[in-house]
Length: 206
Image (cartoon, rainbow, N blue to C red; front, side):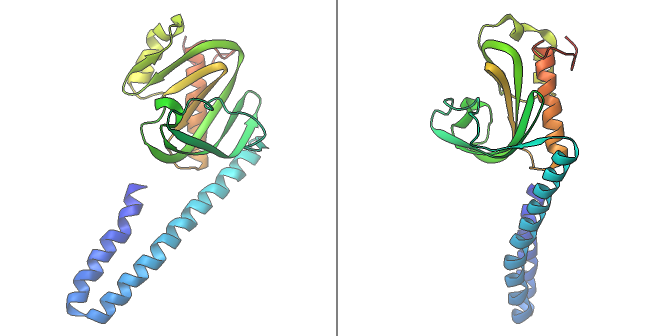
Protein backbone atom coordinates (compact mmCIF):
# COMPACT_ATOMS: atom_id res chain seq x y z
CA UNK A 1 0.00 0.00 0.00
CA UNK A 2 2.77 2.46 0.96
CA UNK A 3 4.70 1.57 -2.19
CA UNK A 4 1.67 2.28 -4.38
CA UNK A 5 1.20 5.65 -2.70
CA UNK A 6 4.79 6.63 -3.49
CA UNK A 7 4.48 5.96 -7.24
CA UNK A 8 2.89 9.35 -8.09
CA UNK A 9 5.60 11.16 -6.07
CA UNK A 10 8.42 9.33 -7.84
CA UNK A 11 6.89 10.00 -11.25
CA UNK A 12 6.30 13.65 -10.43
CA UNK A 13 9.96 14.06 -9.46
CA UNK A 14 10.95 12.39 -12.73
CA UNK A 15 8.71 14.67 -14.79
CA UNK A 16 9.98 17.64 -12.79
CA UNK A 17 13.53 16.82 -13.83
CA UNK A 18 12.34 16.32 -17.41
CA UNK A 19 10.61 19.68 -17.26
CA UNK A 20 13.87 21.51 -16.60
CA UNK A 21 14.96 20.55 -20.14
CA UNK A 22 11.61 20.08 -21.86
CA UNK A 23 9.03 22.29 -20.08
CA UNK A 24 5.94 21.30 -22.07
CA UNK A 25 6.37 17.48 -21.96
CA UNK A 26 7.33 17.75 -18.30
CA UNK A 27 4.20 19.75 -17.43
CA UNK A 28 1.94 17.42 -19.41
CA UNK A 29 3.48 14.39 -17.74
CA UNK A 30 3.05 15.86 -14.25
CA UNK A 31 -0.62 16.66 -14.89
CA UNK A 32 -1.18 13.15 -16.25
CA UNK A 33 0.31 11.63 -13.10
CA UNK A 34 -1.86 13.76 -10.81
CA UNK A 35 -4.99 12.75 -12.71
CA UNK A 36 -4.31 9.12 -13.61
CA UNK A 37 -2.62 7.87 -10.42
CA UNK A 38 -5.62 8.49 -8.08
CA UNK A 39 -7.97 6.95 -10.65
CA UNK A 40 -5.76 3.87 -10.94
CA UNK A 41 -5.58 3.50 -7.17
CA UNK A 42 -9.36 3.83 -6.93
CA UNK A 43 -9.83 1.12 -9.57
CA UNK A 44 -7.48 -1.19 -7.66
CA UNK A 45 -9.42 -0.67 -4.42
CA UNK A 46 -12.73 -1.24 -6.19
CA UNK A 47 -11.48 -4.50 -7.71
CA UNK A 48 -10.36 -5.70 -4.29
CA UNK A 49 -13.76 -4.92 -2.77
CA UNK A 50 -15.60 -6.71 -5.59
CA UNK A 51 -13.25 -9.67 -5.16
CA UNK A 52 -14.00 -9.80 -1.44
CA UNK A 53 -17.73 -9.97 -2.08
CA UNK A 54 -17.32 -12.75 -4.63
CA UNK A 55 -15.07 -14.70 -2.29
CA UNK A 56 -17.58 -14.38 0.56
CA UNK A 57 -20.48 -15.56 -1.62
CA UNK A 58 -18.50 -18.47 -3.05
CA UNK A 59 -17.62 -19.65 0.47
CA UNK A 60 -21.12 -19.58 1.89
CA UNK A 61 -21.08 -16.26 3.74
CA UNK A 62 -24.39 -14.37 4.03
CA UNK A 63 -24.49 -10.54 3.75
CA UNK A 64 -25.31 -8.70 6.98
CA UNK A 65 -26.60 -5.14 7.07
CA UNK A 66 -24.24 -2.88 9.01
CA UNK A 67 -27.18 -1.36 10.86
CA UNK A 68 -29.00 -4.64 11.47
CA UNK A 69 -27.18 -5.42 14.72
CA UNK A 70 -25.07 -3.86 17.43
CA UNK A 71 -21.29 -4.24 17.33
CA UNK A 72 -19.21 -5.28 20.34
CA UNK A 73 -16.95 -2.22 20.09
CA UNK A 74 -19.84 0.21 20.60
CA UNK A 75 -19.28 2.21 23.76
CA UNK A 76 -15.53 1.57 23.80
CA UNK A 77 -14.50 4.68 21.86
CA UNK A 78 -13.19 7.33 24.23
CA UNK A 79 -12.87 10.09 21.69
CA UNK A 80 -13.50 8.66 18.26
CA UNK A 81 -15.83 6.64 16.13
CA UNK A 82 -15.93 3.38 14.23
CA UNK A 83 -18.27 2.62 11.36
CA UNK A 84 -18.90 -0.84 9.95
CA UNK A 85 -19.40 -1.21 6.21
CA UNK A 86 -20.24 -4.36 4.28
CA UNK A 87 -20.34 -7.45 6.46
CA UNK A 88 -20.96 -11.18 6.10
CA UNK A 89 -21.85 -13.94 8.55
CA UNK A 90 -21.50 -17.71 8.64
CA UNK A 91 -22.28 -19.85 11.70
CA UNK A 92 -20.65 -18.15 14.71
CA UNK A 93 -18.47 -15.66 12.77
CA UNK A 94 -19.18 -12.24 11.28
CA UNK A 95 -16.57 -10.25 9.37
CA UNK A 96 -16.53 -7.12 7.28
CA UNK A 97 -15.13 -3.70 6.51
CA UNK A 98 -14.66 -0.99 9.12
CA UNK A 99 -13.44 2.60 9.21
CA UNK A 100 -12.38 4.41 12.36
CA UNK A 101 -10.96 7.66 13.65
CA UNK A 102 -9.81 9.05 16.96
CA UNK A 103 -9.75 6.79 20.00
CA UNK A 104 -12.02 4.12 18.55
CA UNK A 105 -11.74 0.56 19.91
CA UNK A 106 -10.07 1.79 23.13
CA UNK A 107 -6.59 0.99 21.89
CA UNK A 108 -7.37 -2.15 19.91
CA UNK A 109 -5.68 -0.48 16.92
CA UNK A 110 -2.55 1.65 16.99
CA UNK A 111 -3.53 3.90 14.07
CA UNK A 112 -5.60 6.93 15.03
CA UNK A 113 -7.36 6.82 11.69
CA UNK A 114 -7.75 4.07 9.15
CA UNK A 115 -9.76 1.27 7.63
CA UNK A 116 -9.50 -2.49 7.56
CA UNK A 117 -11.20 -5.75 8.40
CA UNK A 118 -13.06 -6.70 11.58
CA UNK A 119 -13.98 -10.18 12.81
CA UNK A 120 -16.59 -10.95 15.47
CA UNK A 121 -16.92 -14.44 16.94
CA UNK A 122 -20.03 -15.34 18.91
CA UNK A 123 -18.93 -17.30 21.97
CA UNK A 124 -20.84 -20.25 23.47
CA UNK A 125 -21.61 -18.20 26.60
CA UNK A 126 -20.96 -14.72 28.07
CA UNK A 127 -17.48 -14.08 29.46
CA UNK A 128 -15.93 -11.45 31.73
CA UNK A 129 -14.41 -8.56 29.82
CA UNK A 130 -10.80 -9.06 28.78
CA UNK A 131 -8.42 -7.88 26.10
CA UNK A 132 -4.84 -7.67 24.89
CA UNK A 133 -3.43 -4.46 23.45
CA UNK A 134 -0.12 -3.44 21.90
CA UNK A 135 2.69 -3.34 22.83
CA UNK A 136 1.64 -5.73 25.62
CA UNK A 137 -1.22 -4.44 27.72
CA UNK A 138 -3.50 -6.98 29.36
CA UNK A 139 -7.02 -5.93 30.34
CA UNK A 140 -9.06 -7.98 32.81
CA UNK A 141 -8.34 -10.54 35.49
CA UNK A 142 -9.54 -13.76 33.86
CA UNK A 143 -7.17 -16.72 34.46
CA UNK A 144 -7.41 -17.38 30.71
CA UNK A 145 -5.17 -14.36 30.14
CA UNK A 146 -2.28 -16.18 31.83
CA UNK A 147 -2.10 -18.97 29.26
CA UNK A 148 1.53 -19.16 28.06
CA UNK A 149 0.68 -20.02 24.44
CA UNK A 150 -1.76 -17.11 24.26
CA UNK A 151 0.90 -14.66 25.51
CA UNK A 152 3.53 -16.16 23.21
CA UNK A 153 1.29 -15.91 20.13
CA UNK A 154 0.46 -12.28 20.93
CA UNK A 155 4.05 -11.21 21.57
CA UNK A 156 5.19 -12.94 18.36
CA UNK A 157 2.53 -11.13 16.32
CA UNK A 158 0.80 -14.39 15.39
CA UNK A 159 -2.50 -12.97 16.68
CA UNK A 160 -3.69 -9.35 16.63
CA UNK A 161 -4.99 -7.25 19.53
CA UNK A 162 -8.36 -8.62 20.62
CA UNK A 163 -11.27 -7.92 22.93
CA UNK A 164 -13.92 -10.06 24.63
CA UNK A 165 -17.15 -8.34 25.66
CA UNK A 166 -20.04 -10.36 27.03
CA UNK A 167 -20.61 -13.16 24.55
CA UNK A 168 -18.42 -11.97 21.68
CA UNK A 169 -14.74 -11.77 20.77
CA UNK A 170 -13.66 -9.24 18.17
CA UNK A 171 -10.54 -8.15 16.33
CA UNK A 172 -9.80 -5.23 14.03
CA UNK A 173 -6.85 -5.26 11.65
CA UNK A 174 -5.60 -2.41 9.48
CA UNK A 175 -5.23 -4.55 6.36
CA UNK A 176 -6.42 -4.23 2.74
CA UNK A 177 -10.13 -4.92 2.33
CA UNK A 178 -9.64 -7.99 0.15
CA UNK A 179 -10.32 -11.71 0.26
CA UNK A 180 -6.85 -12.91 1.28
CA UNK A 181 -6.59 -10.42 4.14
CA UNK A 182 -10.12 -11.20 5.36
CA UNK A 183 -9.50 -14.96 5.31
CA UNK A 184 -6.30 -14.48 7.31
CA UNK A 185 -8.03 -12.18 9.82
CA UNK A 186 -10.79 -14.75 10.34
CA UNK A 187 -8.23 -17.48 10.93
CA UNK A 188 -6.32 -15.34 13.42
CA UNK A 189 -9.48 -14.49 15.35
CA UNK A 190 -10.46 -18.14 15.50
CA UNK A 191 -7.02 -18.97 16.82
CA UNK A 192 -7.52 -16.50 19.67
CA UNK A 193 -10.79 -18.20 20.59
CA UNK A 194 -8.99 -21.53 20.57
CA UNK A 195 -6.10 -20.29 22.70
CA UNK A 196 -8.61 -18.91 25.21
CA UNK A 197 -10.57 -22.17 25.07
CA UNK A 198 -13.69 -20.20 24.24
CA UNK A 199 -14.56 -21.73 20.88
CA UNK A 200 -16.33 -24.94 21.80
CA UNK A 201 -14.13 -26.62 19.19
CA UNK A 202 -10.43 -27.00 18.51
CA UNK A 203 -8.91 -24.24 16.39
CA UNK A 204 -5.58 -24.02 18.18
CA UNK A 205 -3.36 -25.55 20.85
CA UNK A 206 -4.69 -25.12 24.33
